[in-house]
Length: 497
Image (cartoon, rainbow, N blue to C red; front, side, top):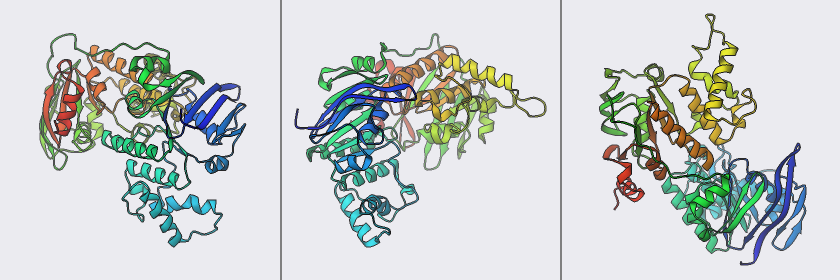
């Protein structure tokens, strides 16, 4: 290995008697891209905070640039060249790009007031380091997720970074944006900067990382070169479970359509869309961001209204002018962003789980029947294996996979005919992903009609009984997942062979 940038040995950390880290070791060389992997709750976030000086370890030591510490402060970690880019990027949405980039430097210099001429110079230098073309006077809240991430990276490089820790950096990026990020990571590596890439996405780990460390329940369970590891072993180390490759095929021939869409169009989004969906089917719709896939399913759920075309449910014309209309027709929708569109994060798990059936769980005076709420919630907690000790806790206390199961519980409690899932496993770890896939297949086998919208091609191939590819607002081809491949789907999505 090249000279060591970071070395941890025997790191222990407990919170209120719960051991989050149990003697963790980690070593990263100069210019190395190292993956830190593990499911939610494995200790990844705690370890990052130990490295960056946020948490003081109970035991063990940290070595950075040849200097050994038993504890660090955040300022010391930054001065030693350690930078962390968290999932939310820690940017201020109400400030401009320039202000976000220059603020840390101004604070480090202990300036009471910001000099805007100096700030512009700092910001210009920051974006120039990675060739980032952005309006420095634009408010960050108006930028894309990918651009916010580039701001965070530009800001990190201002501090003479030697090690950049990226915490789940691709969780909200499209495939195209991921490709651009990986190119940038390789460029940083060529400058001798080390990257600790924190992720649970197997394909990305193998694509970008040279070495890996896997944590499970706060302990090292595996480490080594990614060239010596396959996907099956990686999944086992992360979860302690063996996964078998599965696909879904309906038990019998397609019955009468439960949902029929004919010539539906929405100007600027999609045009002339037609398909049928029968009970027990899982229809996969895939395509690039901007292909019209999300706008189409939002129309089916009454969020937007089409300019033309018809929709039928159970053979009868369905005027779906609102979300209420869609719910009355037996449709449910799990959005791609569960945090802002799917959940009431400060509210309790049970409230989130029953929000779609409040009328049914209320008495004649409009008050909730507590016993009915508890029984409904506990039923779905058991059926979906939602990991919680107390349903009255805020839903934000759950892992990503369990939060997604709560959104699913909300609709399954509503006696659905059609369930639409947009990015069904976005941002969940591998164990939860496998569980959600198994749940979808089980629900379909019991007669529920399902539509999944995803650009995760392995997911579409594993779960769908039919696949429709969208490009530029149109259906370009329908495929049987048993006789197609990821490369074919990719070529049809992009139009590039």
